[in-house]
Image (cartoon, rainbow, N blue to C red; front, side):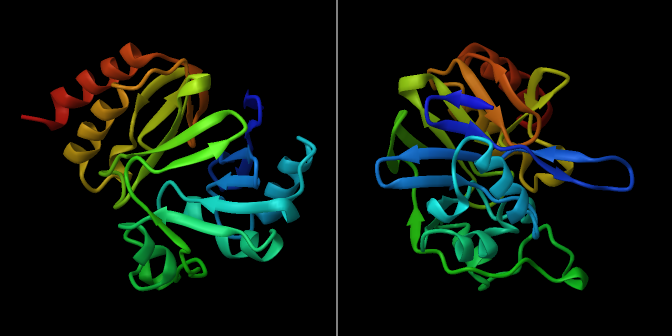
Length: 231
């Protein structure tokens, strides 16, 4: 699915006994090469390659990988994508980097099940860092709460928000984060307030896909969350 010129949603399927789940990382074309936002669970590099090929793109041309956060469904195939790509630069927020590179164990993973392969982070990001893309600037928005160092990405020229897991789409409606997978619900709620300050027309969520939504719609989600999680 094209989210904007040069910005593509990649649908990846996770097979589970209780039903398949679709997750949606993003590919963004830049003047220096292809940037992949998130990578899915371990073993999904083949699905990523197929999804890229459907847009006329090649996983071998991935020049950079940026993580919204370190959870296994976002960073699980990072090592394989790095091996398949064009010696890609790995980006993550400075608070997420220790979990990605192996200094810390992923906070939502079961130690008995091990972890996804650790990968060095080449560039540690902070709030406001901006990537140059074919769709205009893509600015990192620090949105902690769901995970340490969670980032969303705003492309103001095309009115697009890549929300990561800070927001979700359920039954075609924009909703808040998944409570059971969010360690700090109050902080995650305050992060939604930051997103409500942005000028957007489309919100793309890793869980649930894309929906037409404005700052007012995000503010309504914030109001609902604030009533639950903020004093």
